[in-house]
Length: 331
Image (tube, rainbow, N blue to C red):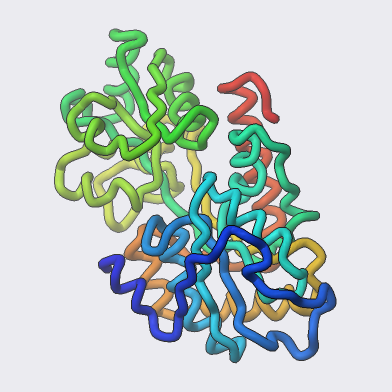
């Protein structure tokens, strides 16, 4: 499905808002009854049509709006690695009308990368539901002429310090996972941080390998421009039936998937949290939503607010451990 199809979801309003919390308007910290009494905003930290977070928000917006009886506004606040979006929601009234769709890493680790104290996903925010489960893979440039992880490991050991992997900056998840893979496979690789798109250098062979979400890599793999070595999910992916899982490749401890979470501001009343969770859960079982997410190599996750909180704790702890192993310090 093309991106512009997602941007034409009926009934979804797009707003690129000013960078001030006042853009949300004024509201009481007490939850009104009944809820909601006005349009609900889902704030995302990327531009319209960019990345799976924005497209996920648009996929769930229409059915959630129908369930809640109020419009859902997808409010795009790009910049600063998602910090602007997270701050806007944390400062909004805790009445359930302003939500954040993003990763727990944005709330905690994006602030650390910016040299700022992290926010707390349980006091500054209230988890509503885990929205998606994504799938990651390891790919190599065709110029390497390797067909599996064993081949990548052997090549890296023969050429220590020559293979490279890319990311969007030191300490980002792409950097941490790439470093973890090189360590586990037993070779030294050079991290190359980029400020912009590194795909052209990967396709040209100037970047050796990547660990990245499947959705971003699948078109290049399908076209034969990149070699998929393994998927990090427990099962093979329908879109890549011939690509082994990381466990089948001999490294079960490197399995990984992630996903985004729907958050409300901290202190949102429990009845409002329950209502939002119900509306979200009903939206994610809609065949249209599941189909749109499948086009992005995503699965609807769903579950209770408690499950979302558990997943948030796990995700923050996992990245802390990666930071400790790669950077020498979790925080």
